[in-house]
Length: 101
Image 1: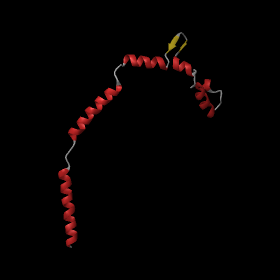
Image 2: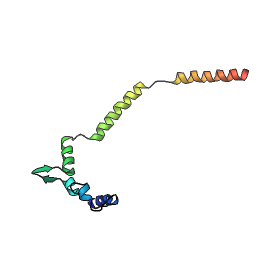
Image 3: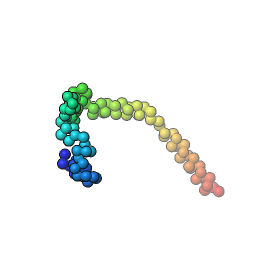
Image 4: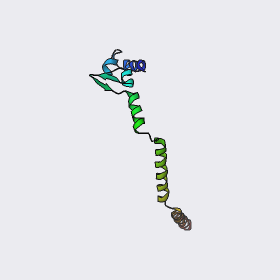
């Protein structure tokens, strides 16, 4: 990934600009790094922390919310059959009036 990132940066500027644009190299951001006596967590560590702190399965939560929302929408549905019949009668009346003239 480092090579591809450097190539992409090279396309839009100086080929040696990788260390200027990215403060740290790819491995430092992915694996984490220590600087000034402090550890900066990398992507792997941050994801592991999220998975530990938030163990619920998001897909099941999404599906539960979807089912709840779907039920509410079904309750809110309005029967428009009477409106359609009324509108069709209006159309017939207009057709009859036009034909009679």
